[in-house]
Length: 165
Image 1: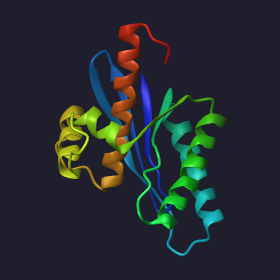
Image 2: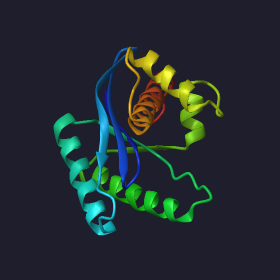
Image 3: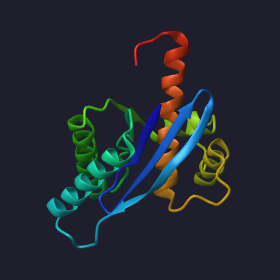
């Protein structure tokens, strides 16, 4: 199974493509989609949408995993991330792909086993799980890979227990 993990954002949107063959995880690609600062929001969202469509067409994932909105004290940031999430969900659905959503706490628990894991702990464990030797950069790409791994782990659990996906 191949999954596209997404860490939403309008300035920087992380992506990670991971495949599972049996119990083996393999990274296919990762990186970020970016939009220039001071670009009007409709243009940023359009750029993000087209970038996602290109990734879906190139890598042909079977599912998309995306981080749920984490509301912090900066309402403006939360609104722009929510807009990016809307574009991500739309791109996935228009491509006919099922979407799994995870809170940051769920991703940390799934990868490290501890919901309050540090960014460093997350990156190190993601690297170990995927056999990556060089530090994953930027952090948005590392987060997207972690989301992809969580999606694959959830799929595997569903298969083991005969549960619907």
